[in-house]
Length: 467
Picture 1 (tube, rainbow, N blue to C red):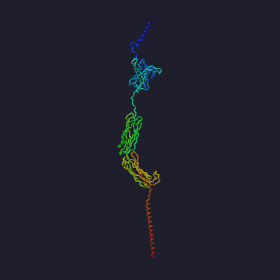
Picture 2: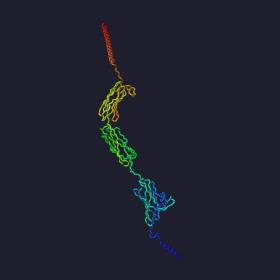
Picture 3: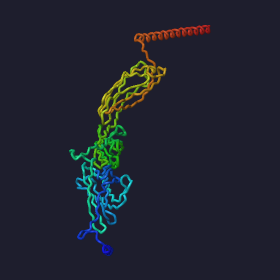
Picture 4: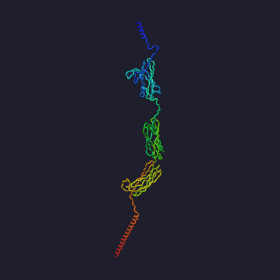
């Protein structure tokens, strides 16, 4: 018994002096390794790995959680984690540098009631916009060092299910961009001053341009203006106008000044506008428009009116003859002459009609002489006396605009003259002649008698004187 105890004591002394290796002779040390904690549920997980955990997909992002537990000592208690997302041509993920270092920590599990010392790997992986539905593997690659400096390299695979992408079995059609209408610039209005342009005169055209698009504006617009009127000249530095920008549905005005030639034929000409501009996408576009300009030759028409007698008598008829001359370079239309005066009643209008340039025509009219109070609208109760009136020349141009020229006159209306009959006119001179003859004869007889009596008296007085 004593010998056994001594043997055991010697063995203990040897162990204390020379440590005994834990490995059998010829065996190598086993490095630390990592494994997935498939029992506990960590934050961001809906179930444990052993019950079929899959990463969550929400809002175009995949949240992948992988808790790892080491079965040995890891240098600095840190691991380097790098995900492999698969082929770039078919992977649903956006490719970035996702590598990171994760340290050992006490992580809450199962709702936070307990903690577990683990390396909690978590990646939020954004998805590509053109992803296709399917199941995609994500490989988590681990790099670390054991306590003795030995390298640790492990890989774990997790599968991600994509359901919010494109259907891989659906027939794909080429994407076509829906065409949108482009803005148009139109002439929405204009104003010409003066309205009727006379040959040889100046005018201003104020033109309104409108962007018809309610969705797109235009910019860098050049408006080139031309006028097809021969001999017309632009009163300005250039016939090209620049407009920086014209908003959606907006309008703008441009003004153009021209001078026409005196020999310009009377007709309608056109101002043409050529517009080049860019839309909001810098696409070059163009449009065109026209503005009509009516040019007329200046009209010169003269009237030669007859002289009205200074005195007329009621009841007479006054014949009038008018001469009209067209001294213009263009025709005039519906030429006529009218007369108006209290007491003078024309039989009608002296109508000539149309007159070509450089021609003359005559027209006649009869005016009945009445009394001043016979004319409508005359409040004067006088029948006779001075009256004033107007002889009016009226004519029209090629577009129907009417022109008038007035010539004033005056005359005195006297009482009507009533002529005696022929028989009375012949008898009255004869009776008057007989009366004067009788008177003369009577006077001569009386004068003779008086003379005879006086001579006799003187003779008697002489006879008495001689006795």
